[in-house]
Image (cartoon, rainbow, N blue to C red):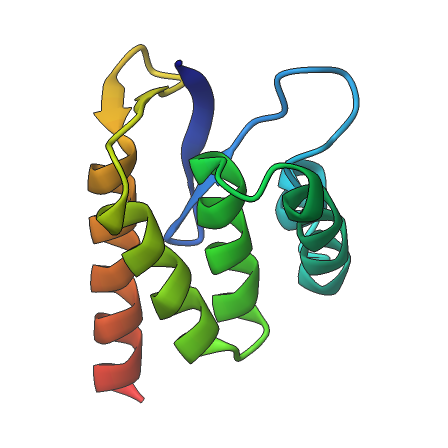
Length: 114
């Protein structure tokens, strides 16, 4: 299974919505409404708890709302599961593991610079 992943926004990897409905929280994240993104993604994860694009976007939203430990935990869950190929808008294909590793790295860098 391959999903489409958007480019980096403010140092965060984001997943684009595959359908017209924003089920991944992408539009809320792009708009900077991280609280709305958390609400939307958590609701979607109740239906699809194993989708890496949801976990990755939720990790971004958690990090932006100060829930760093929760973000870190989600990145680790993604890394503990089989990798999924994710299409990037620039045509590149990255593994969900690559995206999660980059997210964890940003969390560590952000914490170290505070």
